[in-house]
Amino acid sequence: MPESVHPLKLVSLLLQYPEPETTAVLGAVEPDQVAPASAGQRESLATFLEWYRDQTIDALRQSYVDSFDFDRQRSLHLTYQIHGDSRQRGLALLKIKTAYREAGLDPGEDELPDYLPVMLEFASLAKGSAGADLLDRHRPSIELIRASLKDIDSPWISLLDVVRAGLPGLTRRQISRIRRLAEEGPPTEEVGMEPFAPPEVMPNQPGDVPLPLIGGRP
Image (cartoon, rainbow, N blue to C red; front, side, top):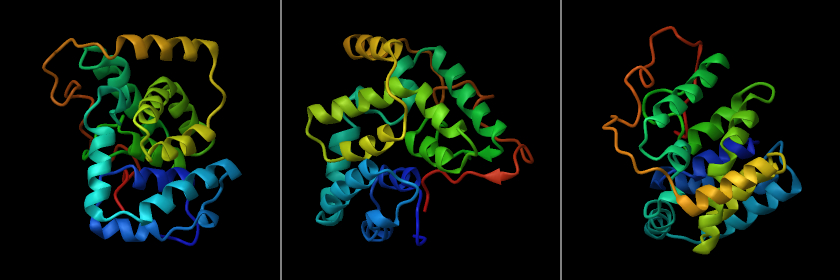
């Protein structure tokens, strides 16, 4: 890792399935190496990293799977929180990918563009407020993940706290939508999308954008 690291870049890496070659490097990061970051973000990272360093790779993986793989409200693919497998999800994915391209960044083809670690890396790289604006447009999904992690007392909630601390306060409209989604859950309409988006959403044409976005890959 570099001498300093953007908080959202670090969270992007930490929110991916733990691998032996990366956990030691990530665990060695100290909160004072994270910049720019608020005191609250550093405190949340310190809490998480203290727990993270004490875990074996097997324990980290089990905790990750328990936290993110068994509940639809904890899916790290943010459009799923809102649209499930409905037809609307393809359009939502296209809008995210368009935002990446307009900022001159390429999300690649390894992950869907709504994967939270990819969105966090975009936010750490994008100029101006483009990254924060995109995250805020998906704030209901982020809040649902965080609330569900809180319900199971998951240590990974600290990473969602870092993301939350960098976003504006919730609006009444966002709060209303979060409550409705928490009660109803994602739509269950099956449309046979592979993978959850029309073909034109996913491919990257050569020469489309000048700068690759590497997602959470170290």
